[in-house]
Amino acid sequence: MLHGCNTIAGQEDSKFIDLSKTTKFIDTLLIDRDLNNWSIRALSSFKQQQFIIRPKDNRYTYRPNNPYGIGFGVGTKKVILDISFNLKASEENPTERYDILWSFFKKNHLVDFYFQRYKGFEVTNAATGETLFREDIRSLSTAIRYMYMFHEADYSIASMKTGLVTADKTTFSLGLGGFILHNTQSADESIIPIPTDGSILTEPVEKFQGTGVGVMMGFSSLIVLPHNFFLSLNAAPGIGLMSKYVTTDEAGYQPKQPVIHQLGLSMILGYNAEQYYINLAISNGYYTTDYNIGDDVIFGYLNAKLAFGYKLKGKVKRNWKK
Image 1 (tube, rainbow, N blue to C red):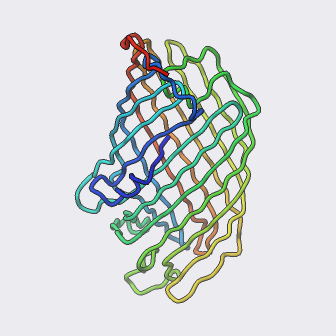
Image 2: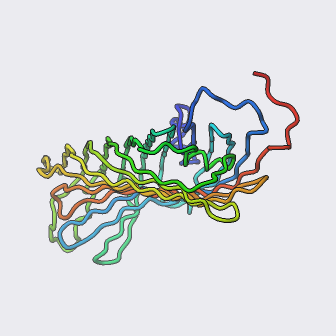
């Protein structure tokens, strides 16, 4: 999954808007020094964070531009490191973004973390069909989720992404866990567009934010398919409480309804051959909560990665010295 560092954070406003890294998901101290256990990877990615506001009888959808990227990486049975560069759909109205997504899986324990900071959103008005770009809208979303799986698998779902591990049986597991998340959306003027006909359907909102905690349950499966294919399906619904605050152009208020609902979904479809592997990984998560500006506000993200890996097995004659 993706991981950033301080040097990358300093480049968030560069021409390459999105520079992100995937990092360790098993044991950071157990680096495999045998190059025959390594692979090199090429990848394409799609990353999008969006939110939906439904004030009274309308619906506004906020999506970033230029969600596509390409990159490269290396992988072992213990570690996978990918670097991806964002591709601008056009020079006009680019979204500035910074994404970190990280996952750790060992035995019964699964930890996910993400941090996403975006500036510049395309706003679609469902009532009129109009779309405009707002470069002043900023969004910050971060969360950490932990899941304890009741069944300890012989291999992790994450390790299957490296192409260096072969599963010989189908497995299913249930789990329980919890999450902590924070979300902030802000703008220089009202995030919800003010109608041009002069009617005020909702009070101008310049910022809304919330921090929540909750519990969740999860389902994880790894299905072994014929001809070296495999499929992984995972789901994690949850419920929690959130402390929220809405800032208007004059003052602000604290919404009374604290409940939040969240759902995480992911899928991996892979093919593992003798010398190479291909896998498609898709993860989608969202949560909803009430900010007293109509119906629930919906926050969501979608990440997809298509990776092609070439194994160095049999191509390297000498091991690293320990």
